[in-house]
Image 1 (cartoon, rainbow, N blue to C red):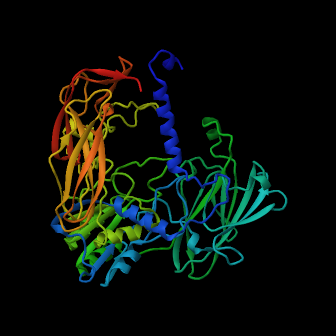
Image 2: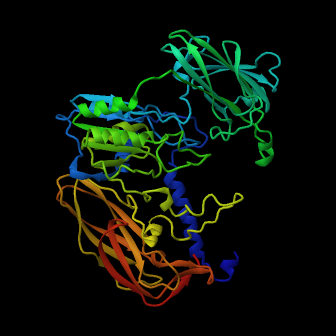
Image 3: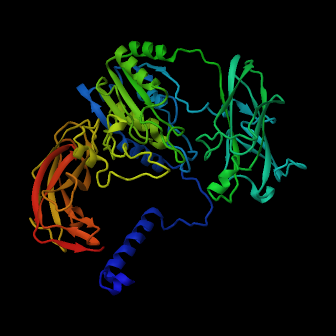
Length: 578
């Protein structure tokens, strides 16, 4: 109100801000969606197709030397290799993790899309913790999963007030404990019967949120009632404790967990001022494994016409609640060694990386093709197959810079700081701005992404050579698809201030437009550039400032691939609050 009364803001400014908020609300919330309505299934054909198309358009082709991609579906014997090839890596970990209606595996989707032989090899393991034991487990009634007997209070007193079945042995009971029946403090006994498929010295793992004990066939094997060493899972639950057990194929072993929802260590409640108690545990299992995964992968690559390596991270390595400790691929260099060995065995190797953030790629100069696949949801396998075989044209652009090494990143010299305090010393120079200022060539620049076709940019024109507070500039640009394949192109427009009173980046992204072009087609794009594209916030003035001077619009396919430019100016410095 003070700003309005002083004339620093107008009613029009306030109305515009309110309109922006309401516009967002209506975009993300359908008019027919009731907040109080019952849950309903949305597994519709049009939704599945939309998810698949979104996955295709997000896949980012980083490198394609010799046009090794797309792969010919009818004349190519393919080796599919990698720890993520036969898994559904649909997203990162944390609160956004959901159970989809279904998932598509890269290996299955590739097999369905080709008429030729597909050879599979896992290549290596990248588990951060032992895999959950769920697929080996049944209840005493023969159903899949775990039985949980719930007790009121934390002393296992009286009879259970409720029995539940959970299908997953990852029992993080943050908000799913039946508090209405057991109260705010509870104890529980989880029981399952684990049946291995092979005989040998197998490994069982156990981590606990609060006090917990693991019994194997009635014998206490892991006592975590007073654990003190925090891990990364389950909001700083315990580390993953392991026990080796001799087992026989087909013979079930009873696993029983006693647990309560008293947080460990006890100081955590005071440290975070937590009033909500939660509990849980995680049971993992791995059978004894003597397979030489790397050699198996090399042999598969040698037998194929082309090798497709599907590597990366997953929900265990990328999640809310903890940071990645390195930019390298997990685990202990095994994936990097796998790539090096496979490309040596078969120079026609395509690397597909699944991650939600940059990873180092020390082998990038040795492989002819690289796809950054991100996390594409339940249609991840189908979307990848569509792009690998050229059924769809990739059109993703990097929303961040991929550096060659962690030491090149903007925040490297400020992190982790001291005494839990970090100085944001990079200031304006984040992302591509930092690499340009420091003259550090990245591995792949911001905005980069190739296509199976070629686009040409025409000479831009602008509606006015002068930008004013009330009148923006409209730039017109012809974009042509001069290749043989239909596809999307994302045209990026950056602004460069030729001379600024204050330090500014070499250029700043001002706008972008994504356009669909059939082979041989040309379209004219119109991009508006307003005061926000040239302004900066001056803390001394207490306002946004657009300085008098000369500027350039730089038009390109990435921050490092500028194709065209055109000049304009601001004739008189002006400021604004909102």
